[in-house]
Length: 137
Ligand SMILES: [Zn+2]
Image 1 (cartoon, rainbow, N blue to C red):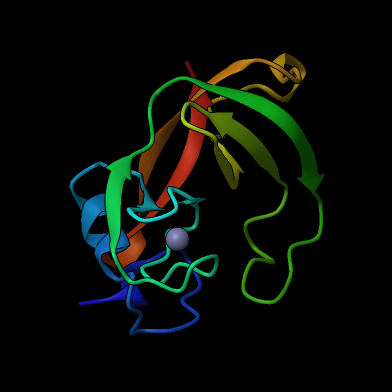
Image 2 (image 1 turned 180 degrees about the vertical axis):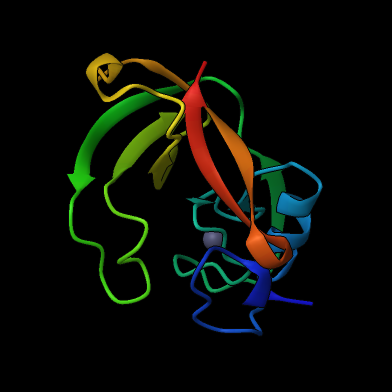
């Protein structure tokens, strides 16, 4: 099992960070950080591009996020045509984790405001696939 279960459109089946998907299946959205230089990664990495060590640790993204910016996608790229319209967002979480993802459709577009409190949730897709997205906190 690997990244073939991630999202509606899978780009690769094998990845060093395949544990990310296993964590999602447990309901956890995880990032990684380098044990040596403490750089934080999301999407998670298991090789630090700063100091080149592979000594990293996983940690769960907290539930206290803030919406930094967002955009409404009206015409999805290849593979996502049928999903549009949807909202993509960037949110900052505790510990310096900046996460890019979708806003939950549960959030009414009229209620979206920069700075609003968000939490990561795991969405279950057809064919036992999983995806993380942001919900109102
Ligand atoms: Zn490092």
